[in-house]
Amino acid sequence: MRVRVLKFGGTSVDTPERRQAAVRRVVQARADGCDPVVVVSAIGRAGAPYATDTLLAELEGVDPAATPAPRERDLIMACGEIISTVIMAHTLAAAGYPATALTGGQAGIVTDEVFGDARIRSINPHYVISTLAEGRIPVVAGFQGVTDPGTGRHGAITTLGRGGSDTTASALGAALRAEAVEIYTDVPGVMTADPRLCPGTVTLPRVSYEEIAEMAHQGAKVLHPRAAEIAMEYGIPLWVKGTTATEAGTQIAGTAAELPHRVTGITHTPRVAYLTLHLPYREDRRRLELELFRILARVRVGFHLLGGSPDAIGLAVPRESLATVAGLLDGLVVPAGGGSPHRLYLLRVDRGGTTFGVQEDLLARAEGLAEVVAVPVQVVDTCAVVSVIATRMWETPGMGVAVLETLQDAGIAVLQTADSALSLSCLVHEKDTGHAVQALHRRFIRQEDDGPPAPGE
Ligand code: ADP
Ligand code: MG
Image (tube, rainbow, N blue to C red; front, top):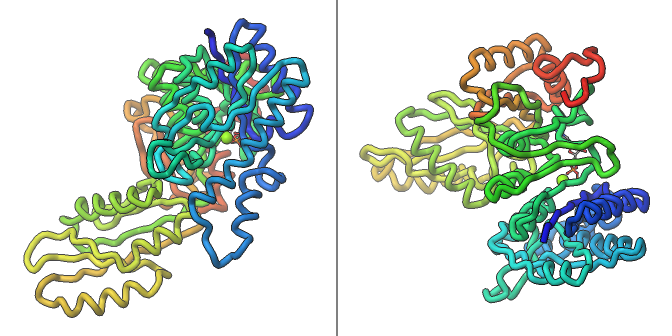
């Protein structure tokens, strides 16, 4: 069996014309001698009748004061993809290609029990395989799985987090030993920056798994980072292509270590809140930092560690997580200091709630047992992170300076910086995001007046 997994995003299945374009891609896979397995997202973007956000808004609108149970939240969020599988399967059937719509659970995708952000634990794709054996095309609902039917949750439907359909496609590709996983979307491939934000972007013909994973982690939502990581782990060839595009798209293969230095692209993460913890004692920094990471991991808040200094820890979190993080940190007592009396850190978040004051009073009663040290946590909630993705970043002297100079020349304030083996990130004011991406793109990728890019550039 030569399996090819084709994943179609929300905008690739939202009109009859685009669905026909998707059908042509599936038919082409067959013509190439492959068995196509289709994965679909919910139809349309935010605002569309069956888009995930619309369904969620319906649930949350029941009573703005009541929070829906995570299990029910996932159940309603999974409906959009299910509707989409039925429409797509029937579209294929009507075109003369018998197809079977499958939920994630029917496709054998078993996850952990973390509703809203579940991880795939195993895949048993026998239903997908038997569907193929009957000469039918399986159309699988992306973004969803089920908890292990053998556990207490009895096969509850879970969702995989934003962009999770890409993960479904990669994971199915791995389970079926697919010869390729193709992610079809509304742009012609992975581009040097988000074309919505930056003029003059070009499609990258080929990138390594690490580069795309880094781009995805640093905000390029064209592909979910987990999808890249799974494909890399199992050595599944991955492509990103435009559903209606004529170009070949982007091939994802190979490792970054094989490549010479190059700037791959510029990415951005919008809607970031930045927290600075001011530390009175440097010697306790590492322990406090470690405790903080543990706490954020426990509530599954992703964060970016930016800048800081010996006297401060800087954390960037998605703005939508700010209320959770601020609620968690304010009044938090962290026993991170050594010495005697034992040193306790008490966090006080800017604009936090009342917990700090209450805790301070309570701890005052424990006088003599511990030294209580207040840690002010400052919050700036209108930030964005702009990143330059490049191979051999650390072996290329001068990159950091060039990035900072470029932003300075463009009149953009950089609040913090951070780097990794494949990226250099700058925290900026959200209003400067577009300008920053454009300035960096002009400096490191191409001048807009370079003329049309040469084919295969
Ligand atoms: P889908 O619904 O098909 O999964 P997404 O909206 O998740 O589509 O991803 C495609 C979008 O990703 C594009 O419309 C584009 O605006 C955005 N994007 C961000 N960064 C990049 C990039 N570097 N290359 C291509 N697209 C990008
Ligand atoms: Mg997507």
